Image (cartoon, rainbow, N blue to C red; front, top):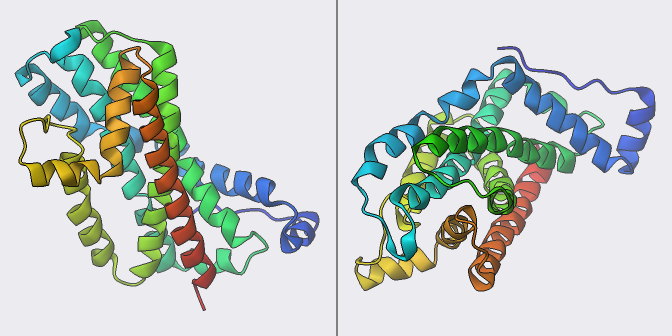
Length: 268
């Protein structure tokens, strides 16, 4: 698969070096990163295979939760959050391929600012997440999942903040694992499933040991999933949503800080 290039005119070069066209640079990078997805949309569906399998195998086994929420209403938001997390954590794999091919080094010496390279790449993750959310909701609606559009939109906004932060961390990991692609996948796989399980995505943790519940509360995804379940059910509990926004914003700030620092020091 060929890597798309970024066309830079003399005018954009002059402004790019001055740092006055950051929004335009971010948009240019985001469009560049989306082109492979548009050419091969099957990649969006392939990332959904595991969540859909879990939906088919786990949801029928779960009893209806309290408060009148069906098992599907409880399980679907967790799968949407899982899709967002998985998609964001593997974004660095694209960067490892660019590092191997040498295209990343050419981008680093281009007039495009390094901040735009990171932010544009991270923002690109929002588009596949939106498509995957719509597909999951559409597939589950005929089987009894109640659709609450306003709640879904609010939930997607929270997940978008979270996904951009995780995507930035994924790119930082790819830069740290330069020349050692196996290291990227080892760390990604080692962290992914503990984070998902501690967030109660697959199974509720109400009856878990105290130490496990403490670890769960320290997991930002736990608070996000908790809010997603309420929002997708058409409810807007202020405290729950506030915790989710704070957790997502914390991941966003931390991810951008680590990612920008890694990008600034790349190739030096």
